[in-house]
Length: 114
Image (cartoon, rainbow, N blue to C red; front, side):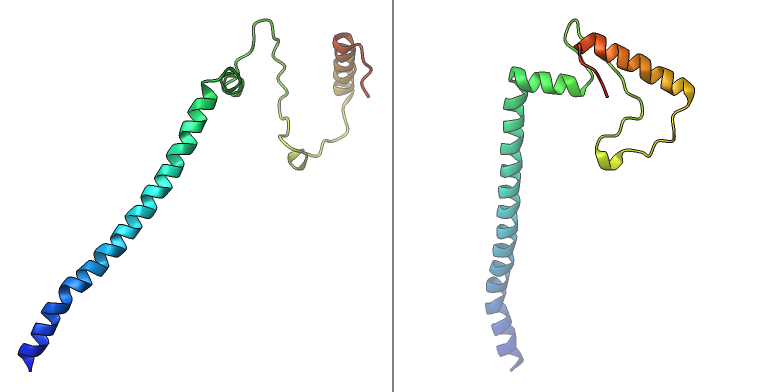
């Protein structure tokens, strides 16, 4: 009887190993598909960055300006309305700055700021 069990176990072993290998192969194929999709996305990104629009976009992100452009830095600026901090009432010095900024804006645009 023990010999029969050993013989059956020996006969089943290749099928079990084939099942494990099949599962590993499926996992590997899934990883390959995922990496192929990521690779395709990176190739599209490279192609975009090689265009003048992509080059300009990336340069802007890095802080580069076109010749003749004047940078304007706003410290503490929120990136979205939900991030905007609540501001206390402006001091007289801040009001003076606001008036100067409005004058500057009008001189640049010819428009009145509110």
